[in-house]
Image (cartoon, rainbow, N blue to C red; front, side, top):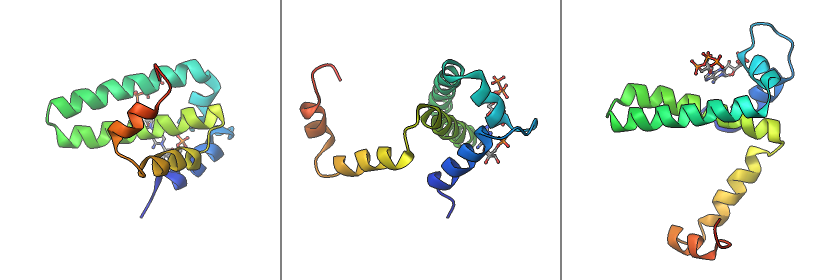
Amino acid sequence: MFDLSQLEAIVAERAASTDPDSYTAKLARRGLPKVAQKLGEEAVETVIAALAEDKAALRGEAADLLYHLLVLLHLRGLPLAEVMEELQARTARTGLQEKAARPHGA
Ligand SMILES: N=c1c2ncn([C@@H]3O[C@H](COP(=O)(O)OP(=O)(O)OP(=O)(O)O)[C@@H](O)[C@H]3O)c2ncn1[C@@H]1O[C@H](COP(=O)(O)O)[C@@H](O)[C@H]1O
């Protein structure tokens, strides 16, 4: 099954490409603030699709959201594996225990 680490590799390769047809390359050139803005927009669109109970729209918006998150992580040099390690570490306790252990305000 296709997974996010495979998409992460595609994003890394396309972000460095000079292919004029590459959306990833175009987006990466626009820089982190633009990518962050796009990620925020996709998050809002995902929420709207979820609240509208439109499963087809939610599927598309969730895909857009994950793709843009990977572009942002790539530009900030944070490997997806580190995020997965963070999530895996959290499985050792409940969400409320994890929240209580966070530094104040985090
Ligand atoms: N998964 C995606 C993916 N999801 C969403 N998008 C793009 O994200 C954009 C989101 O749409 P919007 O209307 O919000 O944005 P827009 O108006 O096109 O662009 P802006 O001017 O607002 O930035 C669309 O252009 C989508 O094509 C993606 N673009 C690429 N990928 C993957 O990345 C691979 C490489 O893509 P390229 O870099 O384009 O070759 C593809 O084969 C896919 O696997």
